[in-house]
Length: 69
Image (cartoon, rainbow, N blue to C red; front, side):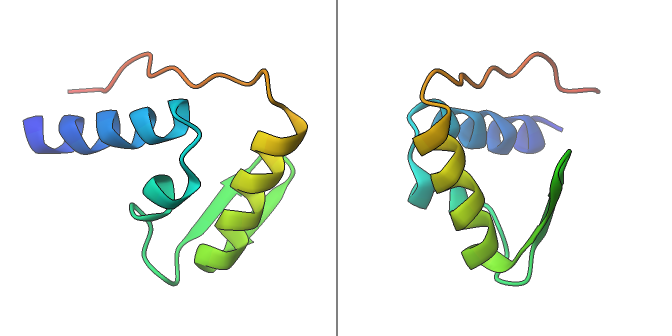
């Protein structure tokens, strides 16, 4: 279980740093990420989402609150 926690924490750090490339490294090429306003497909779609979010919501913060288990 520690391996999963480590991965989640690394992903969280990439988001906190606003490092789109580092965050994308956690996704497979054919990944889909669904958020409240849509589903984003593939790394290109997810990249566009992250870049848009970081550009339009600069005050956004990412905080890992818990990892079950």
